[in-house]
Length: 605
Image (cartoon, rainbow, N blue to C red; front, side, top):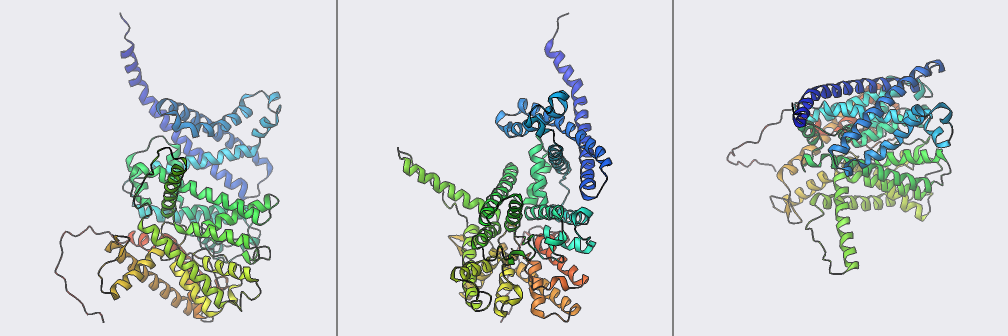
């Protein structure tokens, strides 16, 4: 009987495919269980003072998780090489090499060769296993979360739920014994976690003295995850580490991100956000390290914490008095670096990407002009869109006007002891930080009333859309001003750069302004009733600072009662989530009406 290889191959494939899929499903389930166990052991080992006798069991679990991680990564690499172009797997291959070296050094080499070379000895260290195990936990849980996304999940509920989960998880971690020098209550931990996740900066306990290095690392992680969004991180790692995803997973992520470019650009959009964030923060860390004359790991940690806090517009500091410390408040290079990081973080990722696209096109045309040889410039009309122009112009006006106002109003007050350069730099810093950053290099209680009112106005405006900052946003404020001006001129629409602003954007801007005023007014009245001894100006300042996720304070927040602090917590959460996002979770969205009724004018004035 003649042997038919093709028929045998098809039959074997038909037989082994169900077994292979079953093995993959079992591996995914075991992967998730091991990740959860490793995460629990991580928290137990580093959060509590456990005896050294129990370290053996923790390290055994880590090694088991690492071996499983190595086998799964090997299977993924093998499948990617045969099913996908080598170019798409090159980054995974580069990352796979140190994992392979660690596995070979610790488990394959004979005992007498494991300490034969310093490099081999390094890869056998426990912290290397901890590092790769932690990466596996992040990738594994991200894959599980991404696979579990369903088209029936409301993206707004997913966004709100991710922040709630991060807040309560952060509060629990901050209550661990090894996270604090003096134990904190649940209310104090919750307030700190909300302030970090919502990148606000208001505190009820001193971050520098009440938290250990581990607690400060937890706060930094909460700031980073809250500034970009925990779902942005998990979606990126999930899509990065998984070769295939269902369309419904991608549609849920697309709706959550408000991505208008289609599902084909989801991963590239997430990748760009992560890359720009880490790149700017690393550059900022290097500059702040240089500006502070750093000389060791402690100064590098100091620079890295403030770089992340500044770019995420969080306002947290690990100095006892914040940037009012004697080592920073006269370091004008340091304050300038913080200001630049705040401005970049407050522009918004779409604006940053649009500016980078414009700069790349201009640079390409410039190089073509220099090279010559018949190359023609490529013309792409309207690279800078209308949103970018509005944000840049509004930001520039606010920065310049704020610097002038603070320079004049505080010249003989807060700025009296500064030299001429210090007055300008500090006034500029005072115009930058109220727009959702929360850093202060001066005593807030010493400001004149006019400066306090101007800061309230700046905090209320805030940063730009899709940024790490809060407030009603610069575009909302600009559209409202343009609409008022056009109404006074008798025009029925807003036109900018040969484009008409959509009526829905105008309506949305005024709804946001109205809701923010209502929330600020109601919160200020309730806190004034609960705290009658506090001046109303200070109460309004704290409420605006909370709902705009700024973090500046007139030293009122720590003195509030728990009920008033709970109101501040709610304001920080609403300000970070956004009014429309939160309301859309409870108010059903109506479909567009397919008819129009006759107009009728209503008397207004």
